[in-house]
Structures are given as C-alpha cells and as structure tokens.
Length: 363
Image (tube, rainbow, N blue to C red; front, side, top):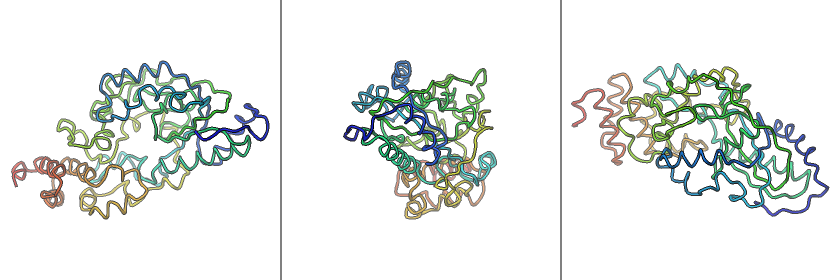
C-alpha cells in the first residue's frame, strides 16, 4: 500500500462514494461498489475447499493462508475495498454454440479473445485511484486484478455486484456473468453497500452442462475436473479420463455460463481492447496446430493465452484434434507433430492419433 498522507481537504466519505459511480462509468467499468472486508463464512468455505484438494496443482491458492480472506492481514491498514466489474463478451465474436458444435474448430473461452484483462483492468483501476487522489489527496491503496490472494467474488458480492452462483461464478441479475472483477484495497473509510442476494433459486442448469462434471455440488467446484483448469492451470499431462469430454475446447470453457438463464441479460462489451484478435473465435484446429512457436508468440502478444506457453497450446490442440471428425487433414496435422521435441506434446499426439486409427499410435 502506498504511503498515506493527510487529505488536501477533510474527507467526506459519503460524497466520495457518490462520485465513484460516475468515475467508474467514465473509465469503462460496468459496475462498482464498496464491500465490507469481513469474510468469516467465505473463509470457512475456502479452507474447506482447499482441504478437499479441489485446487489441484494451484498451490498459490493455499500459499498465503488466511491472508486471502483477511484483507487487513494481506495489506495492513486496509479499511475498505472498492470492487468493480467490466463486461468482456466481444461484440463481433462468432456464435459460441456453433463453434462448439463444429469439431474442426478450436473453442477459446470468450474472455480470452482480446487483450489480456489483467493489463486493461489494472490500468483503469490505477486511473480510478488517481481520480480519488485528486479529490482527497494521497491515500494508501493497492490495486488487484486476479493478481494476489484476494477472495474477489466474495468481495464483489459484498459490494452488491452480484451473487455467487451454483457454478461458483458471480452473476448479476441485470448483466449476467460475462465480466471481469477488480479490487482496490484502501485506507479510506467509505460507506459499504448491502451485499447482493442470491437468485439461482431451484435452477441447476449449470451442473449437468459441465462436460467433465466439475460442479460436484451446488456452489462447489472441483477444479481438478474443470476444463479451464485442465487447459490453462495444469502444467503436465491432461488425464485421459477427461480428454474426450474436453471436445474442441483449447483454452478455457464457457459451458456453465452459456446455459445460465441470467445471461440472456448479458450485454456485449463496449471495450475495444476485448475485440477478437487473429480470428480465434472460430479458427481451424489444423491451422492453429501448425503455428510455429514464433507465430504463437506473435499472435498471442498481449493476450492471456500466452501464459500457457507454446507447449501446452499444442497439448490442448492435440486433444481437440483427437476429438475432431476423422479426416486426412486432421490425421496429417497430428502426424506432422508426432516427433515433436516435447514428450508432453508427443504423448497427446499419440493419444489423438489413436482416436482416429488405433494403428497410427504405433508409428
């Protein structure tokens, strides 16, 4: 947290809170609120989730202990939390259902089709801090965009930005769930918003929609089964038991959100940074698999996709090619990578070739 100093004029918390809505809208945020930072029930839920091992290889989820659920321990001096959301669904993206239904195409989660959201939100949040500082003088603060141990969904719920649905994503009754979250921990006392109430009711459409059965109970996600985890977070081999269910999803998964009835209210983003890049909303798997490492680096410049690296990119596409309709083009694409230097890639290529013609696995 940056060094705090006395404000230039006496702080009026209510007036400052009233100004936040207009400033947030000017910066492209679709919602803003102030959250209470007391999270005892969420802490219990989170620790139970860790104890069950549902975080898999995501050791960073446990590394900071209770600091994730106790803002004052993570950033001493924290008094308030400003939570924001920003819509991300690209205006001109290809139809998601149509892409998922075409086994020759690669499906990329719609949040990752444009510029890396970490960069966009971090910049806007910092600008919001500058607006606040211009009003009240220097103050202590830290900006977060999925970049530190923060229970962002619980804080967003407390800031009245939505409720945590049965699929564990945040849902707003007027905007659906296609948005990013960001936070500012600050040492200014601000009036807090009333937490959102839940409106999933008896609906459980998201649970059977999950291809790998990762939503093991309402509000309980086993990340080890989640396609987003398997294609992004997992560094090694994708368990064979999940490969067929992954289908053509090569980076992330949107299925639980696509079936959520609240997303009929979702609005396309007005943020140009989230426009589709390089046709990744509807690209041929064989063409993507043919990218050299240099092409991968060039075409994922500034994208969240780059974080998985070229090896995992090929791993994921190999699985999707194994699930694609059999054709000479598909088999030839796989055979071209059969002697790839990476053992991880070779293993997934062998599996994929076996799905099309078992005899090719021995080549």
